[in-house]
Image 1 (tube, rainbow over the protein chains, first blue to last red):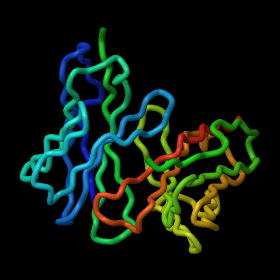
Image 2 (image 1 turned 120 degrees about the vertical axis):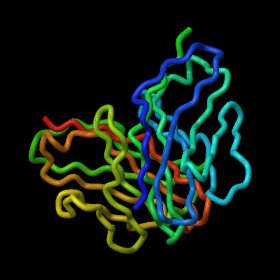
Image 3 (image 1 turned 120 degrees about the horizontal axis):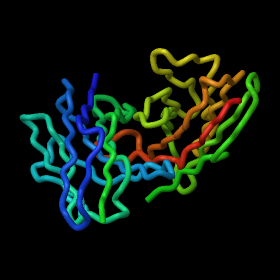
Length: 116
Length: 118
């Protein structure tokens, strides 16, 4: 079974600063994927970034980057140059690839508040 | 990216009635759809995995007879909350995958349905 742990219930960051949202995971499967989603107050889940367990380089997507440390089983999300619109819930998720249709398993989330 | 729609976005019903929520993949065929439930300020909890043309696989603790899932076509899955009670009030989110489960494939989410049972 997979488990995702997000230890920061809430985070504050000053506008234009960088912020790191923590995520650790646990799985016995050698092949898996790690995902980050943003959920604004409207409720929609917005895909941000993906990291495969065998990817050699850390994933980056615009202002988002994933600090993947496989030995530590951590997949922290780094948001650079924070914007007011970044205020939302952020969920780390993972999926094992041992069979085709395994679902995403989510952490409890971190609420990010960007301060002007 | 691919689009998943849900209808209705918001529903209020009386206790004891049944409510149907539709989830559609608009521009791709979804062989697998997932139904999640989210209580306020909590994470998404998987309820069931739905494969087109076969019975849904429910997570432990989810009542099959209460949460009926039908995945009749590659673009439509429905969740029916039967005899709804106030404790069923929640945010229900569907999700669809456009590939059979390869590494890195994205799971697209619908906008969610907020159910309030009076």
